Image (cartoon, rainbow, N blue to C red):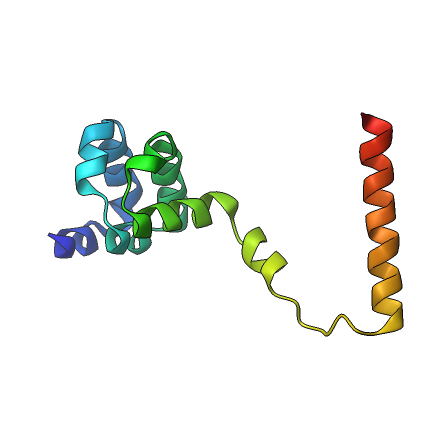
Length: 108
């Protein structure tokens, strides 16, 4: 029952740690709603335990696991708050890619 999760309050991390000790229990317990209801630290620990079973998880839970493990970096990279049409922007991006490719080529 999800109301039980609310009752644990500050002890949620301990409960999640106990649930995550057994992979089969964790797989039976986890839902998208429950995963999003726990504090971020506990959610990250649960997701670490869920990664080996990522292919067996329902798509909605797997998406949360990937998002938690990637952090907010994927969202930040997907969001472009400006248009990439200005000459300076294009030159800056070209310079950045030149540096990145140079490092890659020199490394290999």
